[in-house]
Length: 275
Ligand code: ATR
Image (tube, rainbow, N blue to C red; front, side, top):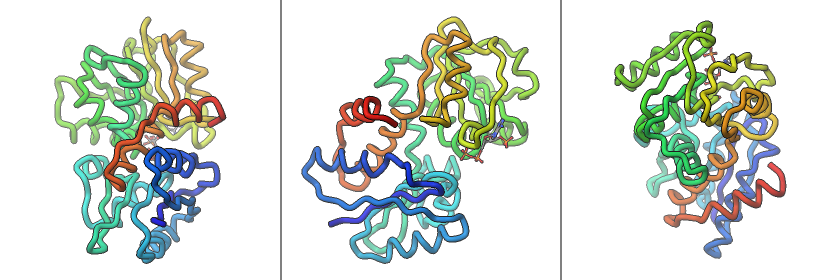
């Protein structure tokens, strides 16, 4: 059967194999989807080795390889080019690799379709300006958020991201040190890797508007600290990135199989049976 994989480091607890198998079952497709733990220095070679198998069609890529995945590919989707990172690698018929980044669209679909948000009119705070933040910033902007304020510990990266979007009337940056004095937001997206690294973020409650939605791109343990903060600050909703994970998988599945899976039963089952 066709071969798929997710590359990461660590990767043992990835939910991607389960998600892709559940999607495949919806269409009666048989596929092999495995996890490949690749140390950074081994990533490029491991990807080449994987795609050397004629049955290999595509791979997902997660931390810490999303930039390296982008660099490995010969063709890049618009979203991948803007982010400079890729979470999906697909082999074309001629053997070349295409890089996609489906994270931004996945976040917007999770917020709007699953959680029912109307992003227009939302003053949005994006925490972080690394690969994950770059992947979602354009999608949030294009989904029509009223303003997008990007705040990063190192201000240069936030400025570079805002400049790249180039819409100064709606997209601007502030300093991390000034978080306590920049008012409140309707949507706060945590795109830092602090939770994944086991580091605490110290954020003022004043950021959380009275009907604010707080969203962490991570899930499980990585999202715990930010979501606990959001609840303590009485955010209206605090969501983790499990829905985004399922949605980005659905986009990869569609690229590879040309079919759109139903994400909701898969999301619900992960929610209930542990993620
Ligand atoms: P990812 O692919 O997860 O985005 P990344 O590209 O290394 O990983 O980016 C990590 C992001 O998390 C950066 O915005 C980083 O801020 P800096 O650019 O200042 O390094 C942010 N980050 C990581 N740990 C953090 C912490 N403890 N506090 C605040 N921001 C943090």
